[in-house]
Image (cartoon, rainbow, N blue to C red; front, side, top):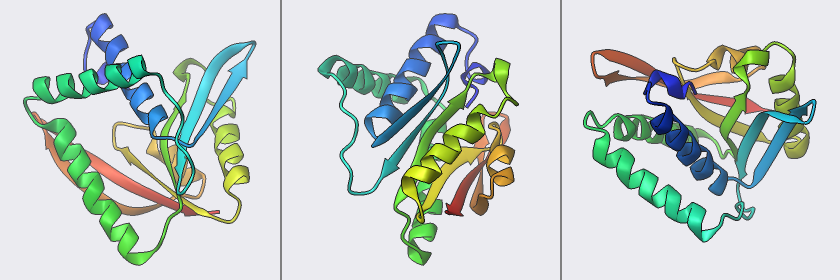
Length: 177
């Protein structure tokens, strides 16, 4: 996800990034990081059914709740709601056909070092952890969804949503390990 496409304000970008990362981390049961020269350069969060989610502090929980309210207040085009609704509709179709025990809910690699295999290694670590299970994820046309396709994910469903004067295609990708 390229947060800089949604705002050019540095403080707003920082706070929104923190909100999204904390929000997704709090829903996750698996969090893996990749380091290069003692610097965090990538991470992946996944939610595996019937496992306990990551613990966050009361302050972090408050930060997430305030962030959610602010996003809803300032999202005059209902972008987040449209995005969430599209994802929900696609997921219902997937669950009508199969049971999927895991979701990748956040995945990021430092864009200044892409192409060095870090994302591939993180995805392989999740695969090793899941072994013989299936996984899904949401992504969109503003993200590097081609990476997942190259790793054997299939587009299960896609839905176009209108955003301001533009549109965005939401994807639900799926893979059986």
